[in-house]
Each structure stands twice: as C-alpha cells, then as structure tokens.
Image 1 (cartoon, rainbow, N blue to C red):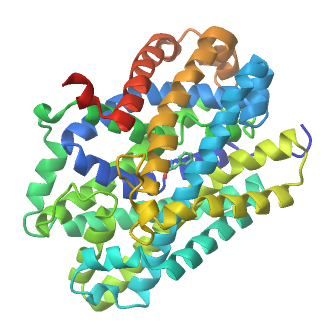
Image 2: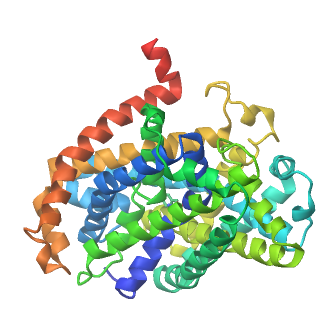
Image 3: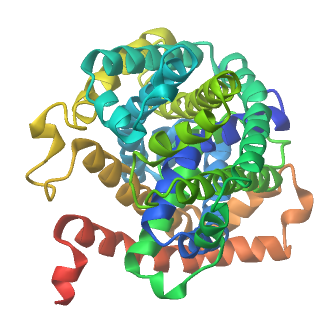
Length: 461
Ligand code: PHE
C-alpha cells in the first residue's frame, strides 16, 4: 500500500476519529433531538444504545478498514466479494449526502461567528427572528458554506496526517474548556434548575418508539458510524495500535461533548423561558442569550470563540465525510487526490443547494410535497442519516456475521491488543454483533422507514 498515508500513531488516530465524531452532531443536533424527545429519557436511551450497539459497531468498522487497508468500497469488496462492495458504495453515497446538508449548517455556524464577533447579532431584540431571517439570506449562506467546503477540501488535500490530525489537536481541548466555562455560567442563571431536571430526571412515560429511534439515529450520526467513515480511517491505522482502547476513548469523548452541550443548553432554554422542542434552530436561538448576558465585550469574545470552535469541530467532521468518497476514487479509480478532492467538493456543494434554500428561501424546497410537506434539509438528513446509518450498521453486522466472521474480526483486533482474545470484552463485542445489533437494528430499520414515509401511528390506528 504505497503512499496511502497513515496516522502518526495512536494519539493521531484517536484525535482524527474523535474529530470526526465530535461536531455539529454533538452541539447542534443532540440538544434539539433531546429537547424534542423528552430530555432525560432521550439521554438515557442514547447512552444505553451507545454502549449496546455503537461501541461494538465502531470496533467492527475500524477492524474491517484496518484489515483490508482500503476505502469503504474496497474494504467490503476485498473481504466479502463484489456484492458486499455495494454496501461500501451505499456508505459513500450517504457520506456525500450527509456532507451536502452538514456543510449548510456549518455555514450558519460560521456566519454566527462573524455576526457575533463583528456584527450586531447580540444586540438584536429577538434571536428567533434573527435566525429565521438569517437562514433565508441567500448570499450569506452561499458564501459561507462555499468557504467551508473549500477549507474542508484544502485539509483533505493535505492528506491524512498533516491536515486531519493537526486540526484536531488544537481544537478538541479548546472546545472542552469553553464548554465548561459556559456551563458554569449558565448554571447560575435564574430557573436553570428547571433545565437540569428536564435534562437529567427521566420521565419514563415519555419513552416511545420515536424516542428510541431518534436516539439511535443520533448515536450513529454522532459517532460517525454506519457509512464507512471509520472503515476509511481504520485503513490508515497501524497494525500495532490498540483499536479497542482507541474506540473506547473516541466513544467517551464524543459522549461527553454531547452531554456537556445538553448541560449548557437546557438551563439556558428554561432560564430564557423558551421551548426545548424548538427543533434545528434551538442552539442558534438560545445561545446568543448567554453571550448577551455576559456583557458586550466578554459576550462577543466568548460567543465568537464558541462559534469559532464549533466551526473547527464541524470542520474535522466534514473532513472525514469528504475523505470517504475521496478515498474511494483515489483507491479504486486511481484518480489523483487533488482532482478528486476539488471535483467532489464542488459536486457536493451543488447537491447541498436545495437544503440551503429549504429554510424559507424557496417554497418548493421548504415544503416537499412527497415528504409530508417537510423541508429538503429534513429529507436529506432523515433519509441519509437517521434511516441509513442504523441500516448501514445493521448490514455491517450481517457482513461480519455471515461473511467475514467474528473470528477474523477478533484476530484483527488482537493485533495491538494481545489480551483481547478470550477476554470478557471480546465475548461482549461478539455477542452484540451477532445478536443484539442485527435484531434491534433490523427491526428498527424497517420501522423507521415506515414511520418517516407513512407515519407509524397511521399503521396502528
Ligand atoms: N459525527 C459527526 C458529528 O457529530 C457527523 C458525521 C457523521 C461525520 C457521519 C462523519 C460521518 O457532527
């Protein structure tokens, strides 16, 4: 495998994979999903599913990638034959589609960084109105998300080690620190305790089918699972590295950022008397309040700093999303890395235009008639992430169980971790991949599709 590039070591891989995991999913999506789906009940199920399904699946993906040493398609194809290769292609398609809308939201975050630091956002009388006017502004959105895509392409071009690792090394600790500072501040605000109860005291009567599958989709999205991102990154991991330990660190880091983000947002939501079920606008509407309360100078600094860090977090995720199709064309079609990266960046940007225009700018994309009148952004994000990632995870476990074999997986995993063989952890991972994942993910994949397109309540009534 000449010149495919490699991570510099365990830390390099952990940082890059955690960089892929930690992103808008943790800070933008997690709080609004939790807010719409019962708060603490959602958090509980999310954590449970992460341990039960996602950790084993993450290990499986990295093992597949490292064993085959190829992109998502090439890895499945090499270990499983041509038919399984299609699963890799499906993942690559999901990566392209997820990046198309992700980049739009990243553009909003970038715009907020500028508007808070240098504009008058914090003085605006109504942050909700500001947001809804902001997202229909065509030129701002176009320019900011184009910039974002360009920076992503630039980092991907630099290759695995220099680009991806370097960006993650600075951003992660900084993001952690600013979150902690903001949480400490938000907890002192009046009525913060109502937010804490909403977020930490589960009301089990709120758990229903939708809570479970939303938490499942969130867990997969947040950990970058089910579409081959970690297969691709796994292919750059050295054989002497401990994948088991790395996966645990990545999972814990990702979970803690999501958890902290909720701990910041919900006290704010309740102290500002807003609804936690605001949807995708939630953090954009709620967060300016805390910066405003900090006064004009500190508020601008903290607010600007926060959104800038959010952009960095998003950037290490967009990089991993773009890397998946890029690796495919470079490995399989022998295209040059440079040409592939720029071509794909432009293509994906164009694919994202309907999502960009779906927040009120263009009626046709704002209310899709074939998707219960919901927006193009909802459509792309729900079909290619909420539905497809758990489905991709399901098919991946089928691949391991019926084709590659848990035995081969264990063998791969014990490279770099000799004590893995016959350990309790091995038994747990194999049990999850053989039984828990296929059953739970199989059932839910079908039910989610029914619900998204027809509404599950129509079926039961
Ligand atoms: N995990 C990223 C986030 O939470 C998004 C992502 C999904 C990245 C799938 C890569 C693959 O923001």
